[in-house]
Length: 195
Image (cartoon, rainbow, N blue to C red):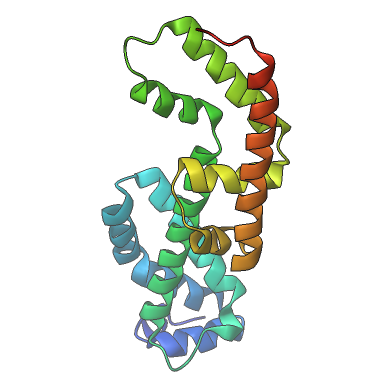
């Protein structure tokens, strides 16, 4: 029979060693030891208890997958919080990209900036044309264009978010702008001019 009191008294590095050797109860003690403080830290960052639960689960899943690579020169709780922070940043990055790529969000922003004297028909026509032009652009280029021109990310930020080189990010943004301008010009010049 396992002495659970003795396991609870072990230091973090001892619990990690016991977990690596197959002692599931040691892993349970590690999880229990930091769950509350980890949850509190993430709640202060997000204010969302459901998201906190997901991030805590992700962090402990990362721990389980990385048992053999947890660095021994870093205190365990520092590694755990660093991993939780990384998971939170990944969540925010994905949420920003999803929001950024939403054409509906783009139009909410555009309508908020539209002067009240512009008539709705004109705004509706522009909206349809912008959506049409964006749909004609290669999806990879469209993503970079929206990140840069709508959301305001710099090319180095885009490169980091997409996991590509700075040179590739700059090329995508440049090509996307040229494609948008070419398609836009083709369609607007075909319309009768208003005088």
